[in-house]
Amino acid sequence: MTPGAAPRGGIWVATGVMTAALAIAPFVGVYPVFLMKALCFALFACAFNLLVGFGGLLSFGHAMFLGTAGYVCAHAAKIWGWPPELAILAGTLAATLLGVVAGALAIRRQGIYFAMITLALAQMMFFFYVQAPFTHGEDGIQAVPRGMLFGLLDLSETLIMYYVVLTIFVAAFLFICRIVNSPFGQVLQAIRENEPRAISLGYDAERYKLLAFVLSAALSGLAGSTKAIVFQLASLTDVHWTMSGEVVLMVLLGGMGTIFGPVVGAFAIIGLENYLSGFGQWVTVITGGIFVVCVLAFRRGIVGELGAWWAQRK
Amino acid sequence: MAADNILETRGLTKEFKGFVAVRDVSLVVRRGTIHALIGPNGAGKTTCFNLLTHFLTPTRGRIFFMGRDITGSRPAAIARLGLVRSFQISAVFPHLSVLENVRIALQRKRGHSYDFWRPAATLSVLDDRARELIDAVGLTDFTTKPAVELPYGRKRALEIATTLALDPEMMLLDEPTAGMAHDDVQRISELIKTVACNRTVLMVEHNLSVVSKLSDHITVLARGEILAQGDYAAVSKNPDVVQAYMGAGHG
Image: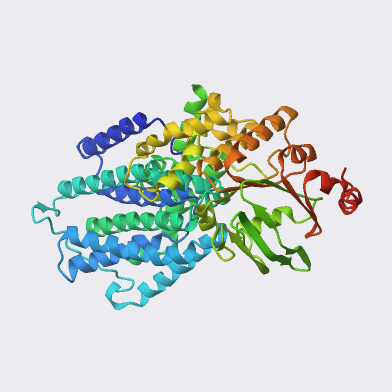
């Protein structure tokens, strides 16, 4: 599945349908809090997919961007009393800066080594957050005020919060579509397909990969910041390595390298966790089982398989 | 270094653990010529290419391109100076269309390649030039096809079109006719001849009839060292060369 494979017009129509469906979802009985959680993870998965699906780089430490942004955003909103828009911006910037440092270190290696370096850096960040006083360790930063967006919108109203989250998600989603279909996106795809050839044409592959890494980190940070405001909480869960694993699962299940795959994957996983929560620890076993089935039976993920089936039918 | 020598190496050496792949090669390529690098398998030809474009770092020796020492330059920087290589295995971007393959190269010269906020449609200003290049290598009918679907010989043609899009001062072609059917060999030979009319070509080639037809100058490598140099007539009569080829089991 390549970025250019789906017709451009099709993507616009599908994005419109998706946005409309999400806009009316709270009125047809879907819990807004569930939707907000799913949207935050969908954004996180889309950001991750930008790196792995379109850049060909499998990071195993993306939780560090989600979690770091969450902590910075929560701290800014609660302790410094910043308004939500500035707190979200601060969290996103923190993740971006961390992305520059982590990316510069990791991008020099490929494949499993790249994954291991990102994992190691994420673990370092995790232990830092366990020890750092401002994170309050196991308790996390609780009771983060949602505040008034731009001094106008009261985010403590669930529906207002929901539409703000939806707006952030759709804007970020369109931004990712643009990145994939930009001059930069073309070079990124060329590098993923044949790196030595791209270099021989005069492209500094590492710089392009670093830019992709930083963009992915920034968007993951946006997801983490938004999540902290929505749940009024920043905790160790979001920097834990299992979070890095979960986003891999979402992207694989939905369809790596497809535009809509990560959204579908995130909703599927969050939906499962939500509606199967009665099964307690079994949820982990069930998602594990899904992962195995996914890798064995439909490697292209839900959207990838549908796309392939559609292409064959024509 | 004389102005009409576009590329020059001095004492170029590459040692791997336990053996010397390229030993003390001092090569001079004159501007505007087609220069062939030949020799039996394992003679160090591809290693030479990798050293010239810094895909490998030389153990010793210097490389000069257009009067400039490029020994320590990064591969992408060397390409931007105008020394562009091809690869032994065909080097295309398989899931990009033929048009997009050529456009990637044109895009680099034009700049804006880090622009992630611009639509890819801004690249369509390059389409006309890309189509010209595609026509020039006879791929007009394949323009919108993904490169992966092209037959082997056509992939090599696409690779040359992509390289040409950079308008390089000098092209390094690694076995441009390897594994090709007779008709394709003919077509690629003529293509090389055409594109070489105002630039320099250094090529590794096994097909001696192609070498004899195309090249102005030949350097023979054997066991990593220069064995002989000269035009085809001189080199083919050189007893050392005959010995090296026969000895290695090649005709």
